[in-house]
Length: 208
Image (cartoon, rainbow, N blue to C red):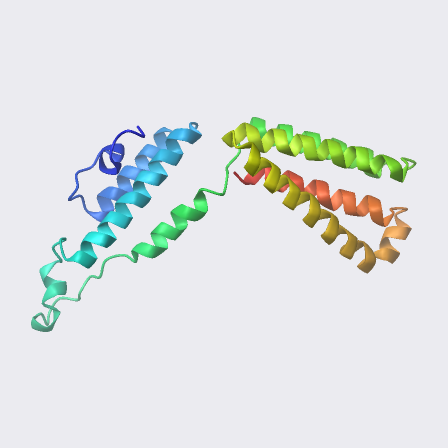
């Protein structure tokens, strides 16, 4: 599918209406919902068509409806303006970074990070073991993210961001919630680790 031009990818003609483009994209996404690679090609083709339409409209190579072109001569018809293309392009761009995990993927990531969090904050577990559990969380995060896109560098980057942000946010919250945490017999380091595991789980489950 990636060797076809974007119009062939969506199975539409170059003069298809915007509604036809939208309908073709929705139909193909629904048909290939379980194939991430095909879905990405469909999204990319859709964005490419929108950009092509915007460029052609700016160049004046796309014919504008008569009621829009001669709006000052029409008094009985309300002009119908085309959709705002940049919003559609932005939505497609954002969707490339958001993942919808399968039930099996979500169960695996949830189970792994939940187990790490339980072991890390389990009463009586030494604080020295937190580094070990965080290292395990780092490794599992790399594995889950790299398995999606096969981009090891990106997996390292996202995991490092999750680790550092989780520790920083967890430490700040631990200072604010010092009294409640003491009543729960939960140290600041353990609470910070818990926040880090939650953030790593969100990143590995819902980001690409």
